[in-house]
Amino acid sequence: MKQYVGLDVSQKEASVGVVDETGRPTYQGRVASGPGALAALLGKKAPHAERIGFETGSMSSWPWHELRRIGLAVVCIDARHAHAAYSVRMNKSDENGARELAELVRIGWCREVAVKSKARATCMIDA
Image (cartoon, rainbow, N blue to C red):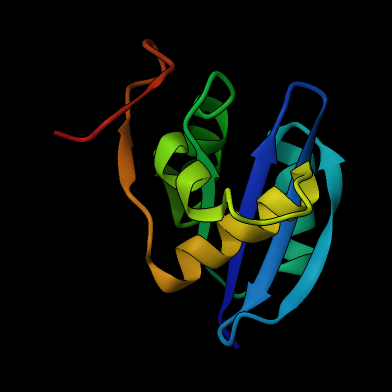
């Protein structure tokens, strides 16, 4: 079964939300921010990940480059668009945000942005 993952990445840890192809949450939790820990968790909790989404921001460069390097399908989402899409939700938290991002990449209702090279290390809106 296809899985869709949302990440809310910070310096110390990342919140992870996984939904299946019907939108049913299958995992919600936290993991240490770092390519190894994140890849291990995704391999265990979302081995059939179709897409992995996270928002633009200061922490978006390393997941983009590192997760793509190991062959995962990642999507960097315009943070303003993502915020507008789930701002009507009552219970806002990093975990809920990660699940909402997973849902956005599942239904495709998000604006994907391009990520600059590692040397520039920031996200930019795709022209």
